[in-house]
Structure formats: structure tokens, C-alpha cells
Amino acid sequence: MHWLTDYWWVILVILVGIVLNGIKELRRLDHKKFLANKPELPPHRDNNAKWDDEEDWPKKK
Image (cartoon, rainbow, N blue to C red; front, side, top):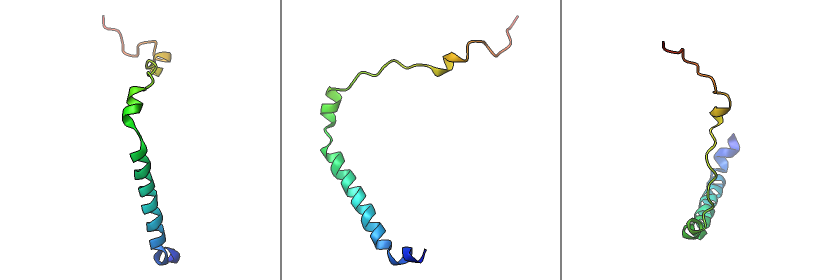
């Protein structure tokens, strides 16, 4: 871990570059165009319906 104390600035420069590239790509994103052509989501499937057919609670008399 001695190299980390010597080259901490290289890691910092790489992280700053990643953040700047992410910001640049997010600025290119056109959210209004996406929202105008947004695909319709399929209906939600409840996965619990497959195995929870029987009732676990005791029946009241």
C-alpha cells in the first residue's frame, strides 16, 4: 500500500475524469425527446400469486 501514498494524485485525476465524462454525457441526454417517445410499460405481474394460493391464516368460525 506504499504506492497508494505515492500515487494518490493519479487516482484522483482518474476519478475527476470519470465524473467529468459522466456530466458531459448527461448533458447530451435529451430527456424531453425520451419522454415524448416513452415506451409503454407492460402490466405488473405479481410473482406471489404463483405460490400463495392457499390461505395461511386459520379460518374464523
